[in-house]
Image (cartoon, rainbow, N blue to C red):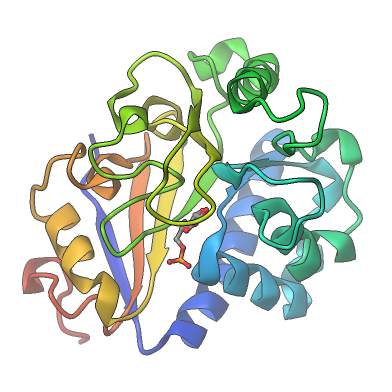
Amino acid sequence: MNDPQVVVHRDGDLLAAATAARLVTRLVDAQAARGHASLVLTGGRTGTAVLEHLRALPALHAVDWSKVDLYWGDERFLPANHPDRNETQAREALLDHLHLDPTRVHAVEPSDGRFGDDPDAAAEAYADVLAAQAQPEDHGAVPAFDVFLLGVGEEGHVASLFPDSPAIHESTRSVVAVRNCPKPPPTRISLTLPAIRQAREVWLMTTGEAKAAAVSMALTGAGEIQLPAAGATGQRRTLWLLDTTAASKVPDLFTPPLA
Ligand SMILES: O=C1O[C@H](COP(=O)(O)O)[C@@H](O)[C@H](O)[C@H]1O
């Protein structure tokens, strides 16, 4: 497994702007290599801020967005177009302003969708979507995503994998229904750690003093059951993108002083 890399930005706005620029470069490189790219989106404040910055970036159009497969690492299980759905927020922040191929936008079923109010059926259907997109060279039940974006909760959750919840113990399925979440809404759909770990690159992004303890523990040997962010790693790269306050408890080893 690769060692995590840590990049610290002066504040949250700069972090979101720099991550947006980094994302354009990564997607352009993937398309140059294979003709297409894949990106897993996250909900939450930092994830949405990155998409807003992307929208304003002139280099945005260096990416051929019609050849980007978009997925969500987790979704709040709510009716279609609900303002709290991660999909709705991503569409408003960026996706509605791009020329996407709708067949490459892989959203999680809403609670008033094909499976009605049955999160297990919606989770199973999303696992089928991911399996259908996985290529033999991906060696797994989900695609080897180019970039998997993740926010990090104060208690160390990533996607909708909360500490010591049934979902964080999942070792075979790629997508699960999550109930009784400590953060509203209580019912969600989430990719699991085995699915996250299929990604080429995992980028964990967070800001603020309230996240500092979780970030520090994840980087210094916490177990993934108690601190799910500790188990979110990429095949080629695991990148922590932080502002100075979220990084304030990270040992110097990870954040060498600038030359
Ligand atoms: O509810 C969620 O929260 C996390 C973290 O959000 P943040 O606002 O603290 O950045 C997010 O990663 C997840 O996708 C989302 O469903």
